[in-house]
Length: 356
Image (cartoon, rainbow, N blue to C red):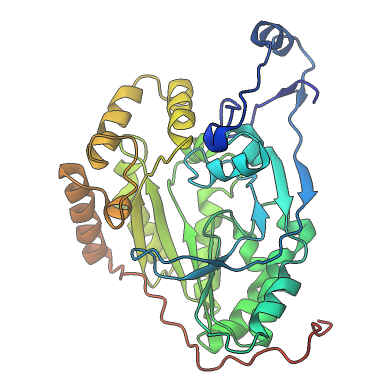
C-alpha cells in the first residue's frame, strides 16, 4: 500500500487488530513518520471490495435490544465515527478497526437476492428487520451501489416491516418507497444527532451529514408521513452532553414524534482509538472524559452487561436520565416506539426476484 495521509478520517491511527490471535504487523515507524512529514502525501482513498456472504439476515437474542433480526449491507463505514462499536468487526478481514474500518469497505452486492430467498422459505416468521444497526445503510457508497434501496424495494413489495437508523440525509432519496411503507405502518426511521455544533461533528463523525442536514431530513420525513425519530446517540460526557436539552428541542421543532439517548460505549479496540482521538482533539479534558465514562461503566472503559450497557450506571447515568426526561417533558418529546404491522406480509412468489 502507498503511504497515505489519514487527514479527514475519524480515527487518528490504524491500530493492529488484537482479536482472533492475529499476528501483529510491524511498521517501520521512523520511516513512516519521515515520509508523512513530506509534502505531497496522497490522501487515503476509499476502496470497495465485493463480499459474497451466504446469508444476509443476522439474528440476535439480546434482551435489551428491540429487534431480533437485522441486515447490514456494508462492512465498514466511511462516516468514520470514532466511537462506532462496529469497528472491531474489521478484524475478521485482518484489517484495523482504525482507519481501515472507514476506508477499506465491503459491499454485499447480492443482499436483496439473499433476502428474497430468506423471505420465501416455508415457515418464515415475519418480524421487523432493522437496518443500520452496525454500519450505516446510507453511507456515501450507497449513492453508487444502491443496495439499501434494493432491499427496501423488496420489503415494500412483500409488505414486510422494517426500521432504518442512519446519520445521513441520503435517506430522503428513498422517500417514495418509505412513504409507501409508512402509509401501511410498515416502516420507521431514526436519525442520529449527536451534536448541533458543526466543529464537534466534523471531528467526531467526519464524513457524516452535517447536523443541520440531519434535522432537515427529520422534518422532511415527518412532513411526508414517515415517522422519523431522533436518536441522541451516543452522548459523550464533557464533549456533547451539554447539548442534550438543545437536541431534544431541535428534534421536536423538526417534528420528531419521539426520541431516545444512549451513553457512549467503548467496546474492545474502540477504547484505545477513542483515547487517541481525545488526545488529538480534546487534550485539555481527556482525563476528565474518560473518568466520567468509567464512572458510567462500573469503573471500566466499557460495560458489556445487558441493560446497563444501554443506560450506564451511577450518578452520571441518573443525571443524564433525569435531564432527558425533564427536557422531553418540557418540549413534548415522546419515547420512540416502533409498533409496526406484521400481518400484511406476503412471501415473495417464485425463486426469482421480480424485475423492479
